[in-house]
Image 1 (cartoon, rainbow, N blue to C red):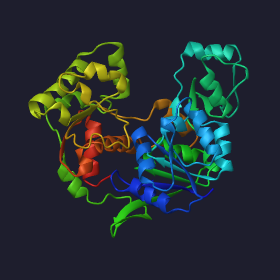
Image 2: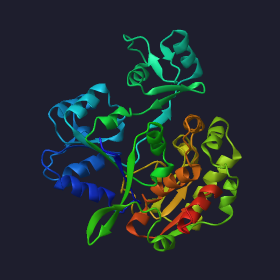
Image 3: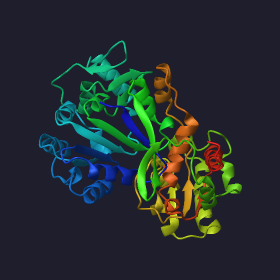
Amino acid sequence: MKDILIVDSKMGSGKTSWIINKIKSSATDEKYIYVTPYIDECERISREITGKHFIEISKEKGIKLEALKKYLVDGKNIATTHALFQRFDNEVLALLSANNYNLVIDEENTVIEQVELSPKDLQMLFDTEMLEVFEDGHVEWTDEDYTGKFKEIKQACSMGNVFFFNGCLLLWLFPVTIFNSMKSVTILTYRFAGSYERAYFDLNAVSYLYKSVRKIGGEFTLVDYVEKEENIEELKKLINIYEGDLNSIGAKRTALSYTQYEKWRKQSSPLQAKLKNNLYNYFHNIQKVSSKEILWTCPKDSKDKLKGKGYAKSYLSFNARATNKYRFRNTLAYCNNLFVQPQIKSFFRKNGIEINEEEYALASLLQWLWRSAVREGKPVNIYIPSSRMRDLLKSYLEGDI
């Protein structure tokens, strides 16, 4: 396989249009599997890439993974979601390799996460010798006949995807061998340098090539990687960042972090009530907008504690990608302060890989911001109570990072 092609350009720069044109103009015998976050994007691929007859796996009845295998055997072009991609098994990898597929991944795919397993359950698995940990930290499942509630962990172990680190299980959500199964791999993303995905590739010695997309002479064209944003002054004019007393709740560097939200969930806090009041005040008294103009976010588990009258149904997950449904929303509230998960940060650091936390946080904020009217070149107002996240956005708009 050639180097993985990383197409790193900001949202709305034409990455998807470029890859669609590339696939449409490719030889008739070239086979593709296109992976994207949302079902409606699968529909777009099927609709716009005429002549390639992409199968949308999400529309298949029954078990989607089995339907995927059937079409891989037949060598069909396939559009599917990140969720199904994360469930690929050894049989899928063999079929992809045998049929010489080209893989396209639209937007960063989650590559690693901590397994949600209670300490008691984990200890039970070790006590019953279901799990065996090897010197390099990888975990194997010892009982091949097991079919109980931990069968997904068993399946992940069979792919070599599970590691034991600092008293917990870490799970690769897809095996690095998948890239060796492909004729080519193209990843469409933004600010790749600060991502888990980049750390994953570096850890596994996967080589990649950086490029960007620009519109030249009316055509979306692949160019050398562009590190500094173009037209940043125009973008700066569109984004009005709230400055005022409502920001006092996020003055500390760690304020509104996931850890703080978890403490609030376990024990009600006047600060949580204050943030909810801030949201209501910002939307209804300061901006005076309707729910159709609003978009807001916070950690998913805290959504119900913060939602209020007039904006409850305007929530969008902070890690939303590749959706244009909210492109007319112009009044925003970003109530997150993102840090790399401690266990994952320590895991990569132990293996000599660093993740830039400021870059990681900024990339997520920008991805979410681009779901709004900004992508249409329209002005937006945004409330960012975290001083850290607010300063990151300001530095970006000044062209400093």
